[in-house]
Length: 404
Image (cartoon, rainbow, N blue to C red; front, side):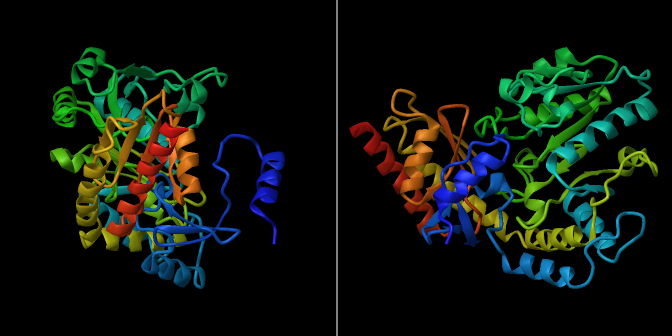
């Protein structure tokens, strides 16, 4: 058997270093638990950045994928296939929108939303050619394509990749007034994460999304909600925007839409927005493929039961109650909603990566971000006992770091 150390050495020497993984090599996974090549088990408290909301190898999702694999996996959009209509109708019903434009990855979905907003601005709003601007937020994370990193405020994602794509105005996250001041006659959209995940699970002030919605409606501006990480049950609602009863003009979806099996993404909007796209103006060979649609249909059916939203709400109460007890004991702040938390570690105690490594040794997988923060986002299928056990491991790890 090839060991973890051997596999890590090969990976480090033969692949680009665009990630800095923790030293664990996973071989298989079921539910909320994963197993490495030596047979050690770990509780997955990252869930592929919310891609695995329904856990690893969910039976319904795997069955849908297996059945489709045996029949048809790809036609390209040159032809119709029998899963496409059901996927579009199902996702349209889930979002309450008329139309769907499917892609593969989250970054592709964001790029799609940007293209649609600009074209809508020119054809519907009447903005002069090449003058459209989109308002975006500081500390955003929408992917790493050249257009998206052009409006990133993260130096690691942004610096060294210019020239940059123009047409974006960056404002502080959580301030509707800042958006209002940045708007002009050429503003076609506001692109916002209802909760900023990569930034450390930053939750905006109460009423912020409502204000953004009202501002956009009054100004003839599209509200684009990037729900790639925050959507599909993670926060205890189908969408994080639901917390304030806000409906954006465009939903941007991905990650959990593929059930942890295949990359599936999409944007959802009404006909007056998505109707401006015509043949040849946007597409993808694999976007909306039969396998992706079959998996997406299974995910939509799971969400339609409401079981996962309710479970994330209930387990989220346990998660946040337990984590708040650690404030002043190595933790300075806890943020989040539902089964999703950003935990700031006391900088004088340890870095987020050091805490992540300490948890790894204790059988819990998390990931650090921005130096002193760790994120907790276990699959929604996690048991309450396992969730409490994971927080106990964090408690022990912090205590051990204090005693070193």
